[in-house]
Image (tube, rainbow, N blue to C red):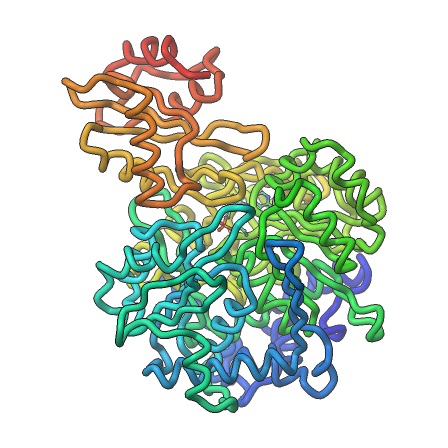
Length: 640
Ligand code: PRX
């Protein structure tokens, strides 16, 4: 979508200015470039106190018409998706826009034929195969709401997400290989399905020849279902504010939050940011850019920047089924070489892990096709930034360090590739339409962008792709995001701003820890640990880790008569793995006799964080503690 692309820094400044002075006109001009069945009549209505945000009200559209139908005339034969399998000896798949259009429409009829209607919720627990993209788009085609659960989560996590939004259908695959390890997805689903009364049908894609037990009447094979239905499926008419999907993210307390994204604003926001941040170029048929985002579609990055943004912009997007270490640590670089990838978007944790490997893994591949490098998910440290820049980009590829969140739907602060001057470890400047604010300890905005400042990051004005609510719990949405500062969206992140207005995100300021780019709330992990029958109480904090960015440290109190042991630690880790998933397993577990608590009974995590980070020289004020003596005991036996 060239017509929405900014082409110079001067243009960026102009667009930014315009977006602040008159946000409605700014976004109208962008939204106009999409295909609407009926134009909206009210661009924006908002009230952060409720909070209530509506974009493009009265507008009618279907996002799949924008991702598929609209491209058929000019880009029908262009590759929409290149799929790269886990096993390098298996063939890649190239799917054109026309083929994708047919496959999506065909599968949409399978959904309908199995009773799925507009507004129904469908849970997807799938490997990184094109059928995941097809299933997602098929839901959107008929107005069903997809809720994708990352296929590394446990059966308990799937069940709680299915039950939270009453999903009627579950789509999965029998099995998938990740590296050399088989993962029996259907088996995990079967476990979840014991406690998900709302699920009526399970569609199973056969990814491998492995036998899958099927429950008569409920479980159906993908291919057999396709044979029963027609290929044509007109797109359902959706309101701009109709729900497009729910995606769960961890919170600092309690159960995961089902973030709700709606149709029109999300489409406009993801496509605009994709086109501008990455500067994707359509070129002539031979010179088309090939864009690869290595995230899993189970996370927001995959939703917005593997599927919706790139496809609405008519790009060629790569989906990779495997892992960066299989068959060896050169896999990413081989894929770039093989597919002639021009845009590569990955996470700092992957960069750090790959930078630790012998450089020969990089050198054996030709990376000269690369034009733009991206980073997302956590702060990128300077060392990793330079390695990425020098060894992968060979000093020729701008790095876009993109800051955003599941809640924001689209990139918020980031350089535009080749346009915004970059600075290592800085996400740099807000995109047009994004009005950040840094808030000091008194809750006052530090407005002078020509003065260095450090504080909490909030956003002052609505943007089209923002989440509209937490599914089933609007009150929680209000409390978590709109109660810290009046009339602002609070991000939960801290940030530093230099005297030229460039932002550097410093990390979470709440009890969320970003481990290997995954957003993990400490409260649900503590709840999982406490499920172990021998555990009385626990506290989990993050500590800095060379590769993962942060890792988890758990302080655990056992019941009186229980002997601490290594076996017990393994059992506790297994409990977390079972309830949440392997990504949430603590790296270190320390048994303690009690936890430092304030007089009001709150665990003083600040101190536990310092101990876990081996930074005990200055523990700050401990006078409000009920049991200050416990600190020495914890330090003496700490595992650092
Ligand atoms: O702390 C920030 C961090 O990831 C959080 C959002 O996590 P999630 O909702 O899982 O979405 C991740 C992908 C968008 C943020 O609150 N984060 C994300 N990108 C960056 C980042 N921290 C620093 N720099 C980034 N570029």
